[in-house]
Image (cartoon, rainbow, N blue to C red; front, top):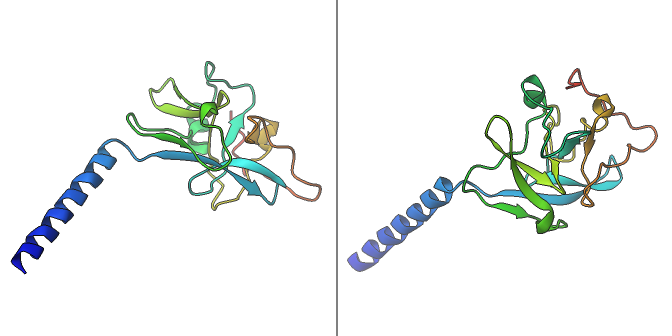
Length: 162
């Protein structure tokens, strides 16, 4: 009985050490594809299903969403040492990381820096689609998702940055 108790403590200790190492290395960031009923197309999303967007005219070499813009449109970033994984429906070769002017490492897909939208509250929301005519959800093909079907509206809620 005593040997079992010691073995159980050892297993818990090893499991705890593994969790510590995983956290120290940074949690993996997963980008995957998911169908979006509002847009009628498949778009890129986070592991939690939050839509990912791109700012028209921005590239991995030219960042324009900074300051207040980056608060409204949080960049999808990955911690140093963390793994970046392509989930269902995506090409791992199209995922990348680029250093932002503030030093953070932003995830890209097909060379497009990826962002979330602060007004998207739940998985599948696309409130950022078409904001200011410059923000669009990204498709697995590496382009902007088409405009929503007729009768569907998306609003920026005052977040028309930059």
